[in-house]
Length: 218
Image 1 (cartoon, rainbow, N blue to C red):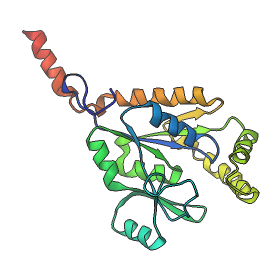
Image 2 (image 1 turned 90 degrees about the vertical axis):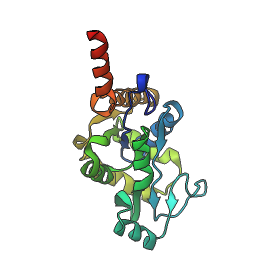
Image 3 (image 1 turned 45 degrees about the vertical axis):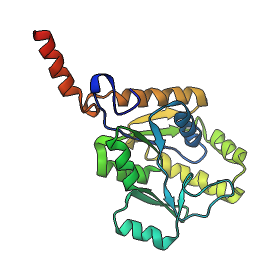
Image 4 (image 1 turned 90 degrees about the horizontal axis):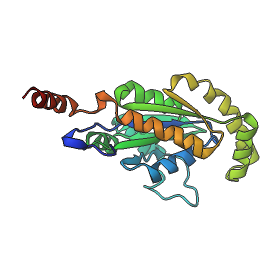
């Protein structure tokens, strides 16, 4: 089932599907594959105080805001989660996510362990979390250099931060080791498909079963 409406009107509440990993481990690539190949899934667009990169678009990649606006969003409880990463702030606007879940659509999150922890505290039943591991430290460093987006100093900082991020791996529901991107995608896709079918998320299932029992009893 790929939307909130399935066979015989059995409905499903959407879920928050979280992908986390150290920078360069592949979560961005896996996120793009999921969005391309999995209907009924949309990307949560975070608000951030960091500067916009040349290829990025406001509202598509991020909602770029200044620090004052971000603080106002926090104060007004407009964010589901927020975190500080490399001196910049990131947060998830609450309203579009809650609307999507209520309509039976799933929302994909590309956030770190801090954001995942906050989501879990606020909406545990709606959150499914996956941590992406690189196959080795050497592979992670190679990927960071291949991206050619950051200076050597920034890459060293990301490698150092990866050690701290890895310490939170056991807090996640699922772990995927990204040896090969297609294999990793297949695993992540299977997780999402299975979580969509969980009994507790299919809100119309009780009525469906009762009706089926009545039919069998005739």
